[in-house]
Length: 352
Image (cartoon, rainbow, N blue to C red):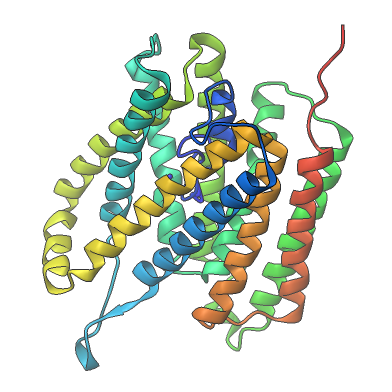
């Protein structure tokens, strides 16, 4: 799901896009797949696994959505977002089921199906918006935009759940917002034709929509945890199952399924890339799971934040997505804010 990264579900495919530590934190009491005590070697293996899986994930995502297929004047572009997310959700559901069978066995689940169905809509909307945004913005912009996911989650938590956060978290958020503003400002004013680049373009709007839906998904998941003690694996499994159902309906009603099958028959490599893209996300989730259960969410947060920075760097080098000095400064500011938030922005547990 969670750059996916995904967060709370896939383990963010809360994204993912990538699926990151929020989904995993619920399962910290589950035995580690690698067993044994935490060690430097184990941390290096886990960190390397996260870097490699999501590095490959990022390359494939950009290759699929921004690549050109065919030769000469008959080149075609990939625009089958529903199909891409469908494959990702199927793989995520299979991964969640296997995780339940291997690690936790049969889990009792009292969560109403209606909650899963509703939550899957915001979850699915966030994934579709995030993937479709790549048709309009560069990959570094998408990665940076999705990196500020904690902000809408925090805002919705304050507004609807009446949550309170330490002052350090607000300062970190201010740092992140400043970095994003610096990055986006240069992106707009460096354009030769300002009329072609409105203040909020289609890509930026889709990223904002994705972040908002991520926040709503997080709020729904918090409700499940509070009232039904829903486990992370059940949450990931059933939300993805409902997402597959919604997507199947959408693929048939829009006719995209037939267009995509024709496209895939002309360019079979796209199917291989889509499955590899989804498997890389699922395997990355496993390494994130091991990292959180063995070394804690702080270490995992530092690793995943660092890998996002290098994903942007790789995109600039491999796909030649140029960034100005000011954009690099803004990017650095965002990741400094995320790093500080990992260390100082957490809520302290009250002592009795």
